[in-house]
Length: 198
Image 1 (cartoon, rainbow, N blue to C red):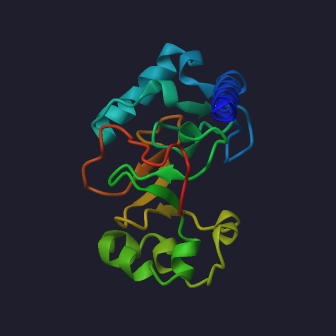
Image 2: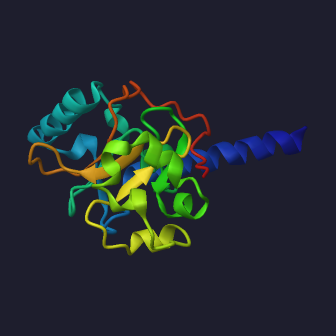
């Protein structure tokens, strides 16, 4: 009994220290490697631009406590992003349509034979997005990281939603935008306690 209590106490301390360290030091941007800035440290103009995107394009108000922004490349990691979902800054995101973990590069999906499902669900984008007709035979994630495709998309293998990093209305931030007319969930429910799966 004493060992269990001691284990729980040590676990609680480690989690608390980890959360404090993440909040204090943050994690690095997965696009350029620069340190990210928390929402509370952004100026009002930046906060207003970010909220405008979420109201206009996703019809929701994000959990601003979980927004991180790269000051260098202006990539914005929102409350569905792995950076806010896990202590280690997991770069996979949670789907904004079906809440499934593992929104990621198309490479593993091409290699596993799941691409026809994405092509069927995203007919309007097949001609415009090379990832949806990829013939490079990627062996996994890393082939996509180095790919020079102009419009590079990420995919959710559960609902076949595709996403692209883009700025909107000539704004300064890059958002992970769902290329879908399906309604976006109002908030992320992290069903895996921050553990991302593929």
